[in-house]
Image 1 (cartoon, chains in turn orange, red, purple):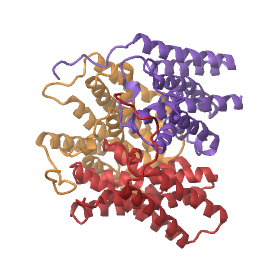
Image 2 (tube, helix red, strand yellow):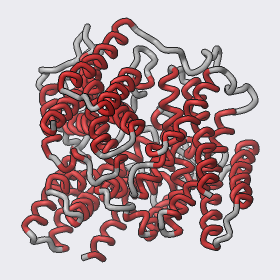
Image 3 (tube, chains in turn purple, red, brown):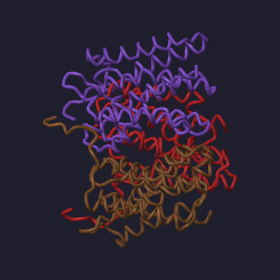
Image 4 (tube, helix red, strand yellow):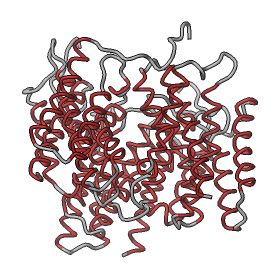
Length: 208
Length: 208
Length: 208
């Protein structure tokens, strides 16, 4: 279980780190800026979760292995092995992968820390959307979570909510985890492809 | 006392959440983006305070009731019950209400945690201005606290300072709390109405 | 040792606070906005470090002396004793001074808290670049760390890495500290003067 959790965490770090390194490339940051933005995107959500749980230093500080996926992501983007394509929005695909992994791991780690189910779901959501939000804010972009094209937080909320249910029922298995994660990823990608929208926060203002 | 504190906290969450939902509407975010921005505005200051106090998870995570005012604010803005008027700057009124409530509760909660008076005043200020600052930064706006039209942090500092004095003297009552809060709110609103300004940070640069 | 550490910390707070007050002046914030931005720049890196270490409230909250250098910086900039010159980029000089001091103190404080060497180096880096990053993000600027002209994080990483080595070897002295700090400062200033660059994060995109 512990190995599985670490594996999912590191995959999530890698996915978000790729999104950070791609954004750094688009904004013409240098390699060190890329490493910082990739680390912030990859580690930020989990660090925020661990700071909120408040039981000592974040996992990413205690275990230096968390740094490797970020470094790998930077190298792959730098070496052009991963790049923004004309037809594929590579950044958004990796961002969706990170989202689908972290809503699981965030919820599990919060439950391990003994928090109540609502807090576990909220921390799953925080882990899932936190790194991407920090990446965008620090790079001076309006965060993806606020982009009304496609849905972003909803799949993560759904994944975290399902995960809390599974943990409460005590029936978690790796296959259930993979299924929830695949569901979150698929919903996010479908929403981008078909341009799903949810109602706006207010009446559209004209002439404003 | 505990019920009073929770009531003031939830009112403050509601006030800042309305400001977040109104900003989300103005920026044409969708309902979920509105819920996230309203929650960040409403809960961000208190979460920052609790993280800085460092005694376990933030109140907003432990007590799910903190989420209700944020959801209510989003619904009221969405249903057009609360909206930006032509003559009233609704966002700024609710922002001022949150400011006046959180400089009290932040100071009280820090004092309950046993911090020194200076730290209590600083955490009162952090609680009061933190949520609004996070709201503006995440929505890619220059924070209200840096807007030289009107005063923002000064009334909150005054409120937190008075509250520390009251707590040190051991004479707190609900009426004193309401009076300080009304004073902070009134100062903020008057400063907006009359365009009070304090000196700039440096000589005005010309041609720069 | 404790007095030395506090002195270095307060000098670092002062240096970053000056950079914050100068940025506030450039952006035409008022005196209170200047105090808030100077405090955020001066105290933000250390507060982030202490929150990540997770052993109670940040030093800057416990010890009110941390506030004095920030207030002093605001007054000096307001009184025009420190200002942006035509030929000297005063802000960048003070920013570099803060960087060179905080990569030392951050590493030492993390080591005192018993963290592993990798975590100590990361927290040294966080302390060094955190305040400046917060300053720029909150003032709605793209952070210096992402500016590809000159190197910023590299000298701080080097300083934090050397400091970890010195602490592991158990040979720290004030002269070694001053030497490392001077090295970091010199590298940063030389990189600005000669426009040193490191490779970009990705191929330069044309027509994008």
